[in-house]
Image (tube, rainbow, N blue to C red):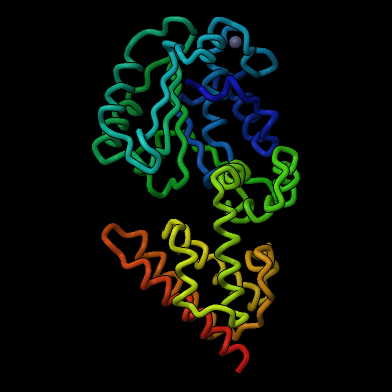
Length: 332
Ligand SMILES: [Zn+2]
């Protein structure tokens, strides 16, 4: 079912400029048949795609929005609109398969039944496997009139250039940090809203998910371990025991972001500081030692993200030892 019917574009103020541009194109009869929404995770690309789908299917649009009441909008709400197709990986993080693209091909080649057009929402497009991507390309090369594809991608560099070039690419950006934080606080009353937003790298919807999934609690644990090591209250190898329930990929990411942030601050950057928001003491660390720590964190991140059985325990124990060594060097 389309998610769009339960939300409103006004709920995502940072998406309005792009929405209005598309609206103008649509009114002028110039909306391309395939849009590719790109941008970092958690900023509303999928919501935008769904809202556009609702709009092209709606039988009585008002002020550029789906009415929410016509037969088409009601069918979308019920999840039974015959002219709407949503294609996503069967499980989060998995591939979109060739069978799903065959479904798309069949769908676009039949006539619309209830609406003046048909609409497909699909993504993340970088998760199409090679065969599926090639099959999609055929649909893009032979556009069918009154069929609109609303695709989205977190990582357009992972999408075949031939697919990208056949779509109208719409780049979406997160709102400025403080605006995003104000928006987030209106929706969720959480003491760690700022940390969640920072971990989400500014993606407001991702921040909500991180809060829901208790990821921020894990992050605070991570920060506690780092300051306990700094205070000499726990040894690195013992400290890892407190972190081993966390996802290794996420943990590697946090180490890397922390290291980068410390390095940037050392170089005079004025960013929203990961380290200060994590309530870590503001260490004045020597730049050349910091660079070594950044490299070690990057190595761990790369190793963990590759397929195979990386020894997470060993990698993270080493990083915690590096962390302690780094702090000692700064005091030397
Ligand atoms: Zn409607």
